[in-house]
Amino acid sequence: MQEIITIHIGQCGVCVGLKYWESLADEHGLDCQGRFVGSSPLQLEKIGVNFAESQSGRHSPRAVFADLDSTSVAALSASSCTGLFRPDSLIEGTGEAASTYGRGYDSPGAKAMAESILTSVQRQLELSDRVRAVHIVHSLGGGTGSGLTSRLLQQGLSGVPVHTFSLFPGQPAIIEAYNATLCAPHLASSAEITYCWDLAGLRAASERPKPDIEDVNRTAANMMLGLTACVRFPGQLNLSPGKLASALVPLPRLHFLLSSLGWGSTHGNSVRELSARMLSPEAQLAACDPSAGRILSAAGIFRGRVPIQALDSALTDLRARREAVFPNWLTHAFSTGVCDIPPRGETVSAAFFVNSSSTANLVEQQATQVRKLFASGRAFFHLYQQEGITEGDMSEALDECDRLCSLYRETATA
Image (tube, rainbow, N blue to C red):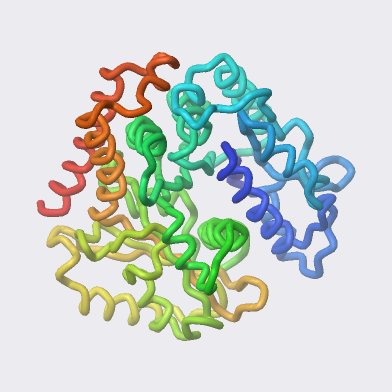
C-alpha cells in the first residue's frame, strides 16, 4: 500500500483540513471517533492510504495540523470530530506569525514547530509501509503558511515527494505579496507538484450565490477527494498522485497546476459535458484561464460508471476543438483515471488538472506587486527586515520568480 501523509499549515491549511478529513471519514464509513460504521467492504479495502489503524480498531488520519497561532488548532480540537485525530498530530504555537514570512520562517517558535512537524512525520513514516507522497495544504499569503512551509521544504521531508495545495493571494495586499513572492521559489525548487488555488476561483467553483468560508473550504476539500479517489477505491483506470506527477510535469520546476471540478447533478451526466469544464476559465479553482497560455499537459479523474470508449472520444474531440492551445511537441495531451465509486449523492463526477503556461501569471502577479511596493518606498518591508529578511533576499526571490515565468513561456513556445 502507498500511503499519503498530509500536513496542514496555518489557518488556511487547518480549516481546509477539517473539511477534508470530515469528508474522507464519511466516504470511508468512519464516525467521529474513527470507528468503522460503514456498510461496504470497499470502504475499508484501501482505507490505509489515508488512515492508520490502531490495535483497538480505531482509524486516525495520517496527518499533522500546525499553526503558530493557536486559534485554528484549538478550534479543530473543539470541533465535533476532534476524536478522529491523534492528540500528538495537533501542534499549537504559543504566539503567531504576525502575518509575515520572516516570523513564520525564522523565529524560534517557527524553528521549533518545524522540528515538531518533522518528528511527527518521521513517526508516521516508520508506521507506514511505503509513503508515496507528503501533501502540504497552506496559503502563500499568510505568515505561517508561507514561512513555515518554506522551512519544511528547505529542510526536506525524508526524501518523500511533496505535493502542495497552495492558496495564492488573488489581489494581494502588501504583506501577502511579500509572503507569496518569498515562498514561491521554494515551491518551484522543492515540491513535485503544486496545485494552485485562490479565493476568487474557489468561491466561483462553489456555485453558491453568496459563498462563505465554509463553502470555500468544502470546494478545496472536494478537489483533494477527487484527486485521491483512484488510490482509495477500485476503478477501471488507476491514476495515482505519482502517475499524475509523471504525466503532468514536463520539466521539474514546471509543476504548477490548475484544477477544476465537475458534478453530474449540476453540469451533466455525460463524459462530454463534464470534460468541457477541464479548460473552462469559469471552472478553475484559481482565477486563471488555462487557454490564455499553452496547455503543456492535462488529466481528468472521473468517479462513477464511466464508459472508457466515450471518455476517449470526448477527450479526442476536446483536443481537436482546442488544437491551437496545445504546443506542437505535445503528442499525448490527456491522462485519465476512473474510480468506480462516485461521491455521496452523485452518479458521476470529475476532477481535472491542467498544466498551462498561464499559471505563470499567478506568480508574476505577486512579483509585480512587490516591485511596485519597492519602487514607491518599500512599504512595511521594515517588518521583514526586523526578522532578518534583507532586500537581497527579496531581490533573489523576485529573480527566481522571473526565471520560473520565463521557463514556462519558453517551454510553451518551443
